Length: 259
Image (cartoon, rainbow, N blue to C red; front, side):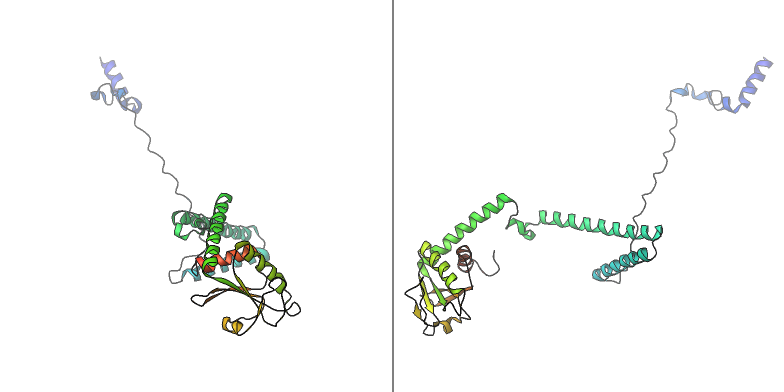
């Protein structure tokens, strides 16, 4: 027994055995327990992005941006004058950080427009082809409505001069005559110097109408409402048929600032 006891004593003295069953035998068959899990290693903290410039709360946003641009330009100049790896790397880091800021700005700009249709011009003026075609159909319909209004309530007044003093008068006469004929509009042609016009043989000499309209030069085209005396300028110089329709739509159908 002494030998057995001695053996047990030796076993208790052995750290390896003492830490096992014999050292904690009152707990029974402890190997059914879950083995202790090793403590997780702490995750490495993310490296902070390089700070291009310290933020000075005393500076305005514009001043901070100007200071940032100056810092980048200074780093670029230093990299050119002293092209060491450290100087070039410092400049490239600044440039990369600025590029990232620009990309964030551009992406946030897009997302803001997606969420704010009142700020997105393309909701009224589409840029995709299908939308552009539909917008043209809408404009053509509005031009036709404006022409109908002019036909019923207004008329065109056209001022011209001879070809020597007004090289574009003959060209504009052709556009005005064709546009009026195709749309059944009334035109009163006024000669400012008494010359005849093959497109408007019934033209009248000016009797103060040019001054009343505030005519600045020739050729000039105006829209007149005979009932109210309201006069709107459609412009000077050469205006082709398509542009005439667009200007009628703008003057008749749209308020200033509408598109």
